[in-house]
Image 1 (cartoon, rainbow, N blue to C red):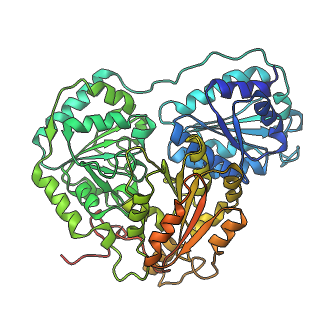
Image 2: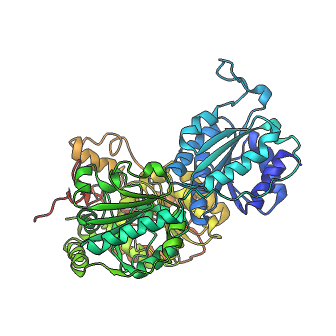
Image 3: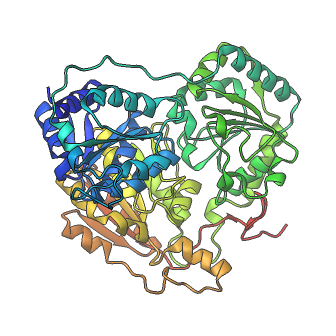
Length: 567
């Protein structure tokens, strides 16, 4: 068979049923082979960045590598932001780029380019992939694709890029290689046992235990195992941004979202705990604050992560375990133990929560309160299988206030923080869920970055419920400029604007509705879900000076958040 045919069959054998692309000359042969093979949906996006982000979301939902293809030159370079997003958020993906014929490649020559659109995407992508590979001969094709798939899903998951010249795509190949299973990089059972028994000993002597969870739990496919663990360990749980969907909103042990814009009570719990178990979270600066000494004071930290370089990285002196969380939960399940956190500790956290709820953070707000709105949106969106959120103030309002159900997932760009993520990611998520409804939440700034994908939604009749929180500015930057630049709104308010999204949506053939007053919220949400099977866009107008609060004060500890409260 031809190499291009092999690639199509390889994806099918790996049970990949959807790929994302923007057609181009150097990948046309591969896409044609996928089409002829059948059984794999080719989703044609309107920008390669969107294809990469859709593949990212497909992977997060299915726990299988997302696949995106792009042509050489600008097609390949347009993938890079999406590739970086997968890398920083530990999302398995395979990016296949076409390349000019080997005879047209400059090789070691100092000329800038020999073939049309020839670009060294491998060296560009190398820092943000687990590996970037240029195929140079036909004999290496099978082993490289098996390696790419295996590497993407093993250890700390992430993206792999495979660059393949046009002439090799058309060459003959002998046969398919056997299916190779993922490598298990986790430590042995004895290490897990020793780690956990040591934790249990400290648990008996502590007064303020806490668990911090991140995306590592969902990446390991261990959400249910973690929930089972909590049946025996009645310990409060806080989450990172990517750990929001590990526990449903109503779970009795869920405290809330931590970090720079975290819920005050969740940050209080993280600051004051004396024993912290961290599962699948890397404790970056947006989680702990920049005052590391304060964060570590008075607490002992146990940290489980699949990647050794994340252990004792920023936060030193932790008791660590390098382990896949699936193996960790599987092994400790057999250790019979029961623990209930001191009632005074749990009550104190609840007291802090009731003293300043998330819906009361924005004093003297004009018009719609976004935290209140997010609660209302959650309560009418039970049919949604996932929320996909863009980057900006709206991302923080969602993290603070979304009421996630047990089977609802939350997707966003965390480590990369890429505006424009939500719309294409919602497409990938909806396809991964069999075209079930998802909610896409974006700001007016981020939405315009990949606004062209409204056409992809319409063409595929995807039931994506789009909510644009329009504050008529780049709100997070505008808020930053209020704090540090004497309200000089360069390029956030000055020289910035946006279209009427409701009208634009209708031009794309998607029904829409706009609201600007509190009294209109109920009508708007009713319109949003009037037909669950159809896409819809709801534009929600906010006052331009609507802030995301609370927020850790620059250089301060977790509990020193603005606006400051009277003690």
